[in-house]
Image 1 (cartoon, helix red, strand yellow):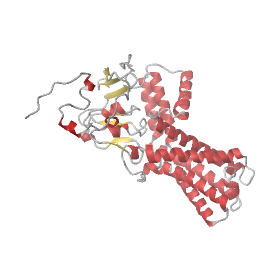
Image 2 (image 1 turned 60 degrees about the horizontal axis):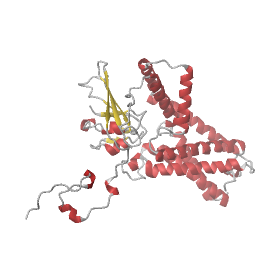
Image 3 (image 1 turned 180 degrees about the vertical axis):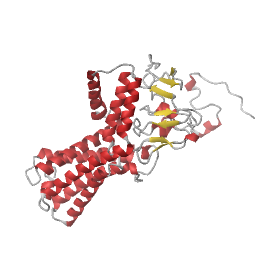
Image 4 (image 1 turned 180 degrees about the horizontal axis):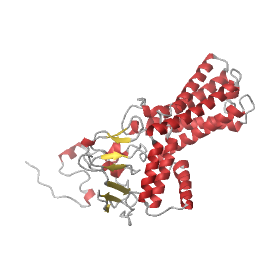
Length: 147
Length: 252
């Protein structure tokens, strides 16, 4: 089910434009509100639904095979680290789910740009970025280098 | 410059009736534009339908006192403090522009009707007129060049204009030309360049007020209505959003 934007709730902040991996959330040239420029290409990842601070984005099926009436609504609570979902089925049933998404405060993860650039010889290392420090171990087992 | 009234200086060349008639025409243009916009976009019908569906989904009846409280909350939080905005930069820019515009508008009307030919205009009005225009320029330019989603998120060139920009461009141009025109008045009130700048001020101000059906001008009326409706839905249990989570998972 692709996304659509409720224009009376959207304030045109562009969070969904930033986060859409398919680059199909854009800003309308007339109303400066977000909209899905190509629902057929929506991956249905719901990133924009979760990122919208105004709860302005919902999802809906194509009218030819999914009669309208259902709803998928999302509430993201940054201060609690929780995303809650409310699913309304077409037969009227409603189900709610709450998922913890993180345990560290919002915005506390440093961006890659805030780290020093690694030296060029790190390209030869078998370790990934920030290993082993980020894993809180002294060292990781590594395969012996080929002779 | 901050203590002189541009409209009383203008009265040396034009009758005060000219600007008074112009203000009345612009007010009429805004009223007509909003009514046309409401009819064309069927906004009133949309809000009425939404109110009906919210009433049908409501889990509790709201009394007059509760509705009045929600109306006050909407006015104070959503309208006066721009509480809708998630990011402080957008909020501050919006507040600067909105309060600047109100001050600029009110002082213009007061000076045009109350002190049109009075060189002794109280300095508070003239200073507020300048302050309002400067606030619009500060908040509006910040929004236009740095915060506008077209620029900040879509990475478009700041000067690539679209229909959605009519309102902000009209507002910035009106404030900027008002200040430049007044500065030119102070240097040489009768000069040709002063008249040209006055013409540009009138043109940009007219652009701002007569383009209501095509610009975002009317959002200042719709957004409070939408915010009020959103609060009503939340209070009556008609909101379709999930319930807030009961516990926090953040470990501090």
